[in-house]
Structures are given as C-alpha cells and as structure tokens.
Amino acid sequence: MRKKLTREERKIAYLKEAEQLYDNMETWYDQNPDATFEEIETELRLHRRQLMGKSLNILINDREDDQQPQISCPDCGTAMRFKGRGTKTVIGIEGDTTLDRTYYSCPNKCEGTAFFPSG
Ligand SMILES: [Zn+2]
Image (tube, rainbow, N blue to C red; front, side, top):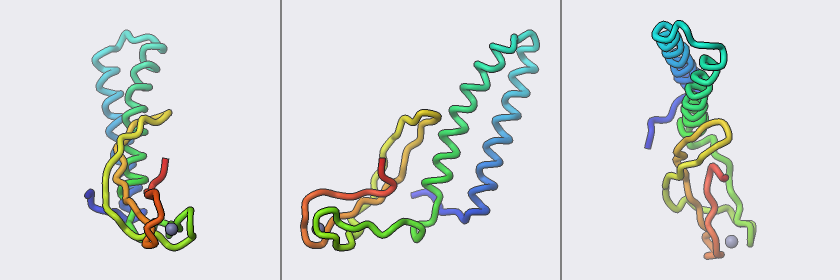
C-alpha cells in the first residue's frame, strides 16, 4: 500500500508532477528547437497523458481510508465488511493508472463483492 496523504500533501504531490511535466517539455523544446506547433502539441499530449495517470493515482490512491464511503450490500442492505485489498489497472480516457482497491463482502453471505473505488 502507498502511504496515504492529506489533501494538502496530495496537492503538493500533484503540483510536483505538473512541474516535472513542464520541465520535461522545456528540455524537449531545447532539444527540438525547429519543432512545428503540431509536433510540440503531439509531444505535450504524451506528457499530458502521463500526468493525468499520475494525478489520478494521487487523487484516488493517496486518499485516506476513512474518506471511503460506507458500502451497503445491494441484496440485503447490510453494511458490507472489509474483505481485502487488490489492484486493478484502468485504461482511462485521459490517463492510465493502477488503482489500489478495497474489497468488501456481505456479512450475511450474499453473493457478490463490492469494491472501492468502483469502475
Ligand atoms: Zn447482503
């Protein structure tokens, strides 16, 4: 498990990633001074996708556990219990990230498992 961060720490972590992206673009432009606008945009798009993946990771995975919602069993409505942790790699529209997920099951032994974050 990653270390959990406060909201302020997550913001700092995100800004650090954004700063790194900008520095990388500056370096790339120094090395490719003749690049056309289209080439610059194409390069930035690749960096943006990486940044989006990283920001999703910070936003979702670095959040404290006590901010997770109470999940009720879809069958009987009872509060579900912690079952374990796992990961899932999500290929998003704007970025890819590996989610740390918490899994829940119903204490009444209803079928199915819930997980957070969903999706
Ligand atoms: Zn149930």
